[in-house]
Amino acid sequence: MRECNIEKNKSMCNCTYEPCPRKGVCCECIMYHKRSGGVPACFFSDEAERSYDRSVENFIKSYRENGF
Ligand code: SF4
Image (cartoon, rainbow, N blue to C red; front, side, top):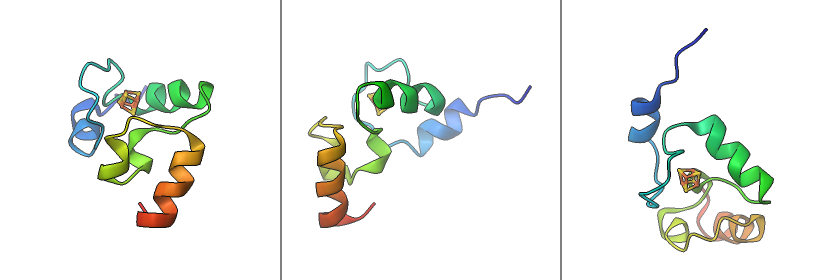
């Protein structure tokens, strides 16, 4: 089985929500936000990410304004 690259993933993660136990575990991060109708922090610009609004609506707004 392939090992998870948690430390490498963390080095590329722009999420500023520090207490999250899913940081660097991208598969869990994606499933968590998918279940709640949102997307992970890395889909947002740094500025939009800091709002902690991970909704699809905010993603579309952020993407239109800033791209990835
Ligand atoms: S995007 Fe969400 S699940 Fe992923 S590390 Fe940040 S707070 Fe945790």
